[in-house]
Length: 187
Ligand code: ITT
Image (cartoon, rainbow, N blue to C red):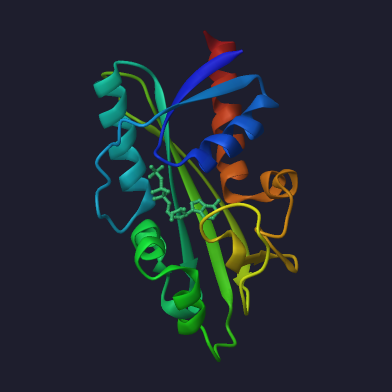
């Protein structure tokens, strides 16, 4: 089993990543050293900076995860500002902004940043297209899960297993795991 330090303050992400990566022989250990989150327009830039900062700070290989919900009718809002928007206005007010809106299309995106000390970071992204629900549904998951719907059910209504088989995080982590596997074969 390979163990990777996952730098994040969000225990739900650790749980999901641990579950997803356990199938490919990787365990994750949370470190909450709190890398500075740049207010950038791109998740990639935030993950890149965070991964490098944390790898150098901890002097260890690390991964970080920057995720965002991009709502088409709102011009991609809240996107890279998803954490701030969730903490300030939250799901109920987002649904209010979407009232009467027929275009419910949204994309959840996850960017995994991986870095070794003194090296440049690598990025792996995954996204899933869905819809903003008319109302909050389901008690599972976290964050935007009760309002993000894929195939008729919100992430909040799905069991963990189902979400972890199709989520943005699953897709990004799969790319990361495949890359690691190829790397191990070469060395
Ligand atoms: P770290 O930066 O410490 O990893 P965070 O929760 O601040 O944790 P993000 O900036 O990546 O992480 O998250 C943006 C927001 O999106 C935040 O409010 C999360 O709760 C939420 N979020 C991230 N992944 C999610 C998922 O799979 N389902 C629902 N909400 C999610």
